[in-house]
Length: 201
Image 1 (tube, rainbow, N blue to C red):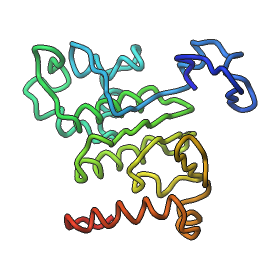
Image 2 (image 1 turned 90 degrees about the vertical axis):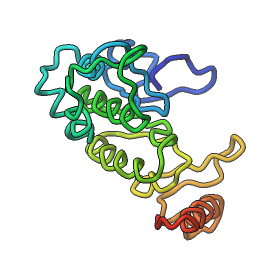
Image 3 (image 1 turned 135 degrees about the vertical axis):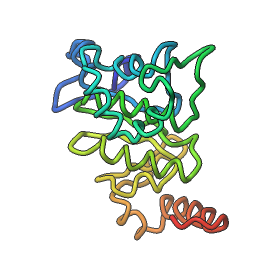
Image 4 (image 1 turned 180 degrees about the horizontal axis):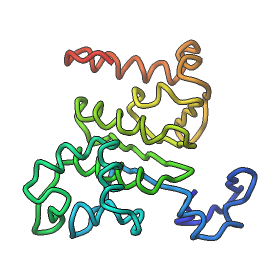
Protein backbone atom coordinates (compact mmCIF):
# COMPACT_ATOMS: atom_id res chain seq x y z
CA UNK A 1 0.00 0.00 0.00
CA UNK A 2 2.89 2.39 0.70
CA UNK A 3 4.75 1.08 -2.37
CA UNK A 4 7.79 -0.06 -0.48
CA UNK A 5 7.61 -2.63 -3.27
CA UNK A 6 5.23 -2.99 -6.20
CA UNK A 7 2.68 -5.76 -6.66
CA UNK A 8 3.40 -8.33 -9.37
CA UNK A 9 -0.25 -9.31 -9.84
CA UNK A 10 -3.45 -7.33 -9.47
CA UNK A 11 -3.67 -3.74 -8.33
CA UNK A 12 -4.33 -1.67 -5.22
CA UNK A 13 -6.83 1.15 -5.52
CA UNK A 14 -7.46 4.11 -3.21
CA UNK A 15 -10.82 5.74 -3.98
CA UNK A 16 -10.68 4.04 -7.38
CA UNK A 17 -7.17 5.30 -8.20
CA UNK A 18 -4.31 2.84 -8.75
CA UNK A 19 -1.56 3.62 -6.24
CA UNK A 20 0.96 3.33 -9.08
CA UNK A 21 -0.63 6.45 -10.57
CA UNK A 22 0.05 8.44 -7.39
CA UNK A 23 3.37 10.13 -6.69
CA UNK A 24 5.45 8.71 -3.86
CA UNK A 25 5.14 12.06 -2.07
CA UNK A 26 1.33 12.04 -2.23
CA UNK A 27 1.12 8.41 -1.14
CA UNK A 28 3.55 8.70 1.75
CA UNK A 29 1.86 11.90 2.94
CA UNK A 30 -1.51 10.14 2.97
CA UNK A 31 -0.47 6.97 4.82
CA UNK A 32 0.98 6.40 8.30
CA UNK A 33 2.12 3.10 9.79
CA UNK A 34 2.31 2.06 13.44
CA UNK A 35 4.08 -1.29 13.54
CA UNK A 36 5.36 -3.76 16.11
CA UNK A 37 8.91 -2.55 15.51
CA UNK A 38 9.03 1.16 16.29
CA UNK A 39 11.98 2.96 14.74
CA UNK A 40 13.35 5.75 16.92
CA UNK A 41 16.53 7.56 15.93
CA UNK A 42 19.17 9.07 18.19
CA UNK A 43 17.93 12.48 19.28
CA UNK A 44 15.31 14.03 21.54
CA UNK A 45 11.80 12.70 22.06
CA UNK A 46 10.56 15.95 20.51
CA UNK A 47 12.63 15.41 17.36
CA UNK A 48 11.47 11.80 17.07
CA UNK A 49 7.80 12.77 17.18
CA UNK A 50 8.31 15.77 14.85
CA UNK A 51 9.85 13.45 12.25
CA UNK A 52 6.31 12.89 10.93
CA UNK A 53 5.69 16.63 10.56
CA UNK A 54 8.88 18.73 10.76
CA UNK A 55 6.99 22.03 10.66
CA UNK A 56 4.93 21.18 13.78
CA UNK A 57 5.28 23.37 16.87
CA UNK A 58 6.20 22.02 20.29
CA UNK A 59 2.63 22.69 21.44
CA UNK A 60 1.31 20.52 18.59
CA UNK A 61 3.74 17.74 19.55
CA UNK A 62 2.53 17.92 23.16
CA UNK A 63 -1.12 17.83 22.05
CA UNK A 64 -0.44 14.71 19.93
CA UNK A 65 1.40 13.09 22.85
CA UNK A 66 -1.52 13.71 25.21
CA UNK A 67 -3.89 11.95 22.80
CA UNK A 68 -1.37 9.09 22.44
CA UNK A 69 -1.13 8.64 26.24
CA UNK A 70 2.59 9.47 25.97
CA UNK A 71 2.69 12.89 27.66
CA UNK A 72 2.39 11.52 31.20
CA UNK A 73 5.57 9.45 31.01
CA UNK A 74 7.54 11.99 28.93
CA UNK A 75 7.12 14.80 31.48
CA UNK A 76 8.45 12.54 34.26
CA UNK A 77 11.93 12.74 32.72
CA UNK A 78 14.02 15.69 33.96
CA UNK A 79 14.42 17.02 30.41
CA UNK A 80 10.87 16.16 29.35
CA UNK A 81 10.44 16.34 25.58
CA UNK A 82 14.12 17.24 25.19
CA UNK A 83 15.22 13.93 26.75
CA UNK A 84 17.79 12.28 24.48
CA UNK A 85 16.91 8.74 23.40
CA UNK A 86 18.53 6.16 21.17
CA UNK A 87 21.96 4.52 21.30
CA UNK A 88 23.85 5.51 24.43
CA UNK A 89 20.97 7.59 25.77
CA UNK A 90 17.71 6.99 27.66
CA UNK A 91 16.23 3.57 26.90
CA UNK A 92 12.46 3.41 26.57
CA UNK A 93 10.20 0.44 27.25
CA UNK A 94 8.27 -1.22 24.42
CA UNK A 95 5.05 0.47 25.52
CA UNK A 96 6.71 3.90 25.66
CA UNK A 97 8.20 3.44 22.19
CA UNK A 98 4.79 2.49 20.82
CA UNK A 99 3.13 5.54 22.32
CA UNK A 100 5.76 7.79 20.74
CA UNK A 101 5.05 6.07 17.43
CA UNK A 102 1.32 6.71 17.90
CA UNK A 103 2.00 10.38 18.76
CA UNK A 104 4.02 10.61 15.55
CA UNK A 105 1.09 9.22 13.54
CA UNK A 106 -1.38 11.57 15.26
CA UNK A 107 0.84 14.54 14.39
CA UNK A 108 0.97 13.42 10.76
CA UNK A 109 -2.85 13.15 10.63
CA UNK A 110 -2.96 10.75 7.66
CA UNK A 111 -6.00 9.79 5.60
CA UNK A 112 -5.07 6.10 5.79
CA UNK A 113 -3.63 4.39 8.84
CA UNK A 114 -1.97 0.96 8.93
CA UNK A 115 -1.60 -0.74 12.31
CA UNK A 116 0.69 -3.73 11.85
CA UNK A 117 0.71 -5.81 15.05
CA UNK A 118 0.86 -2.49 16.90
CA UNK A 119 0.36 -4.10 20.33
CA UNK A 120 1.92 -7.52 19.71
CA UNK A 121 4.89 -7.08 22.04
CA UNK A 122 2.86 -5.61 24.90
CA UNK A 123 1.63 -7.17 28.11
CA UNK A 124 -2.15 -7.06 28.45
CA UNK A 125 -2.28 -4.03 30.75
CA UNK A 126 0.01 -1.95 28.51
CA UNK A 127 -1.94 -3.12 25.47
CA UNK A 128 -5.15 -1.71 26.93
CA UNK A 129 -3.52 1.69 27.48
CA UNK A 130 -2.19 1.72 23.93
CA UNK A 131 -5.50 0.48 22.54
CA UNK A 132 -7.22 3.52 24.04
CA UNK A 133 -4.68 5.74 22.26
CA UNK A 134 -5.19 3.83 19.01
CA UNK A 135 -8.96 4.25 19.27
CA UNK A 136 -8.47 8.02 19.39
CA UNK A 137 -5.99 7.88 16.50
CA UNK A 138 -8.23 5.85 14.17
CA UNK A 139 -11.34 7.99 14.64
CA UNK A 140 -12.53 9.25 11.24
CA UNK A 141 -9.73 7.52 9.30
CA UNK A 142 -9.59 4.56 6.94
CA UNK A 143 -7.70 2.04 9.06
CA UNK A 144 -6.18 -1.31 8.13
CA UNK A 145 -5.31 -3.41 11.17
CA UNK A 146 -3.10 -6.50 10.97
CA UNK A 147 -3.31 -8.39 14.25
CA UNK A 148 -3.30 -11.77 15.95
CA UNK A 149 -4.81 -10.42 19.18
CA UNK A 150 -8.46 -10.49 18.22
CA UNK A 151 -9.53 -8.22 21.08
CA UNK A 152 -7.98 -5.33 19.13
CA UNK A 153 -10.32 -5.98 16.18
CA UNK A 154 -13.74 -6.17 17.81
CA UNK A 155 -14.86 -2.72 16.59
CA UNK A 156 -13.70 -3.17 12.98
CA UNK A 157 -16.29 -2.62 10.22
CA UNK A 158 -15.01 -5.65 8.33
CA UNK A 159 -12.68 -8.49 9.30
CA UNK A 160 -10.81 -10.63 6.79
CA UNK A 161 -9.54 -13.94 8.16
CA UNK A 162 -6.41 -15.27 6.44
CA UNK A 163 -5.41 -18.89 6.98
CA UNK A 164 -2.66 -20.66 5.04
CA UNK A 165 -2.68 -17.92 2.41
CA UNK A 166 -6.44 -18.18 1.83
CA UNK A 167 -9.42 -16.09 2.96
CA UNK A 168 -11.96 -18.50 4.49
CA UNK A 169 -14.14 -15.84 6.16
CA UNK A 170 -14.97 -12.16 6.27
CA UNK A 171 -17.53 -10.03 8.08
CA UNK A 172 -17.99 -8.20 11.37
CA UNK A 173 -16.77 -9.76 14.61
CA UNK A 174 -20.36 -10.54 15.61
CA UNK A 175 -21.09 -12.21 12.26
CA UNK A 176 -17.93 -14.31 12.38
CA UNK A 177 -18.61 -15.46 15.94
CA UNK A 178 -22.06 -16.64 14.85
CA UNK A 179 -20.52 -18.69 12.02
CA UNK A 180 -18.44 -20.66 14.54
CA UNK A 181 -15.65 -21.10 12.01
CA UNK A 182 -11.95 -20.16 12.01
CA UNK A 183 -12.43 -16.78 13.72
CA UNK A 184 -14.70 -18.26 16.40
CA UNK A 185 -12.14 -20.97 17.25
CA UNK A 186 -9.29 -18.45 17.47
CA UNK A 187 -11.37 -16.07 19.58
CA UNK A 188 -12.35 -18.85 21.98
CA UNK A 189 -8.73 -19.99 22.35
CA UNK A 190 -7.56 -16.48 23.20
CA UNK A 191 -10.47 -15.76 25.56
CA UNK A 192 -9.86 -19.04 27.42
CA UNK A 193 -6.13 -18.30 27.68
CA UNK A 194 -6.82 -14.88 29.22
CA UNK A 195 -9.26 -16.37 31.73
CA UNK A 196 -6.62 -18.82 32.96
CA UNK A 197 -4.45 -15.88 34.03
CA UNK A 198 -7.38 -14.00 35.56
CA UNK A 199 -8.02 -11.45 32.80
CA UNK A 200 -11.44 -10.99 31.26
CA UNK A 201 -11.33 -10.10 27.55
